Amino acid sequence: MNKQSIKPSKAFRQSIAANIRYWSQRTKRLDDQTIQELAGERQNLYQAAEFGIHLEETWPAAVELILQCFYYVERRGFWSEWIPLLESTLAYYPENSPQLETRLKNNLGACYRLERKFDLAIQIHDEEMDLASQLDDKRLIALAHNNLGKTYYLMHRYEEAEDHGQAAISFFENRPADRHRLAAMFNLLGLISQALGDYDQSESRLQAAVKEFRLADIPLELARALGNLGITHDSKGEYQSAISCYLEAAEILEPTIYEVDKARLQLSLGTAYFNLDDLTAATMAYEKANSSYMRREGPTYYQAAIANNLGNVYLAQERLLEAETYLREAILLWRRSGAHLMLANSLGTLAETMIATGNHVDAIGYYEEALGIVEQYPEDAWSQKMADEFKEAMEKLTIKMKAEEAS
Image 1 (cartoon, rainbow, N blue to C red):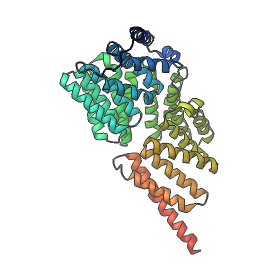
Image 2 (cartoon, rainbow, N blue to C red):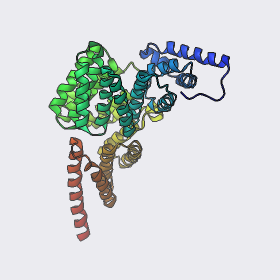
Image 3 (cartoon, rainbow, N blue to C red):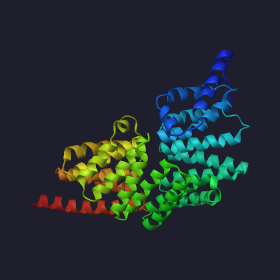
Image 4 (cartoon, rainbow, N blue to C red):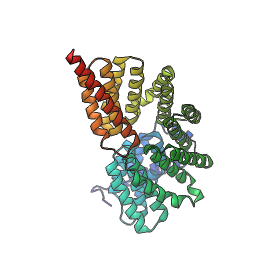
């Protein structure tokens, strides 16, 4: 462990230790009420942990506080500011605590994943797996599989994601105490099948996830799994079934403080209405997703998703200036978050908007960029669907432009 060159006073050290004990007690039970009570105090909590990891005598208690608070950080979307704290904690890590190091790497990798820093997440989770294997701790190994599976899924590396998910399930399915983790892996496998276009398998896996989350009595995760199941129904053209899933999830989330999840759900609900050509209901859902909280504190990825969906619905309503404004905002945010397929989708919609305004040259340019992106993901069902649509649209537009030149 690194040591400071100037030793703090005894009174200061005692103050830090007392502060850590206070926050450890405050965060011991992280239910919805406690999380809501912490809303305005997260900087004080952060500061207590940050001071604690820099003193040798308070480091262990500070680390336990940091690990204990991860549920709060993940639920409230504060992973970006938590990353430097976890990095600093590992920098001050004593060599005789491999289990703590494994748990810290678990949390840091998850934060990197949530921040969409996937290469860093894989690197940290590989280190987590190595440490867990050296300890021969089967539960820690399963947790590393869990994290690697989630990260590879977001990287569109579905075969590797499936392998890690199945490895985690083989451990968790025999441990009733880990029912929530089993449910999370069924959810992951359902999302993988969804991405590969196997919607029947996706539905089966996500129904298993919903069942396990109900039994584990974890409302937030149940709402998330219902939202994912709704997307699978939506992809199968079962829009009313999708809406039923979304409305049940919305009822679960309504009394909670999970604003990001509420916004995600409204985006999905709006899309189901959009697919039913109910543009009024779709617009209401998307505008509800665009809450003051999301505009102020929402993660970049979801700010982009909201802007994209508003652009889509405004285009369908022929509100072209508003559509262009939101789509350009979405594209800027997708680039910032590194969400390539979502970027391609927004580029394609902006191309449609340019066609509607008569700007065919720019439309071709946006289609070409979008096509260059989707061709990098040949295994992804949605990617290939977009590729076919972009090629067809470009061909039609090229023919139209040639006909206009000839006339």
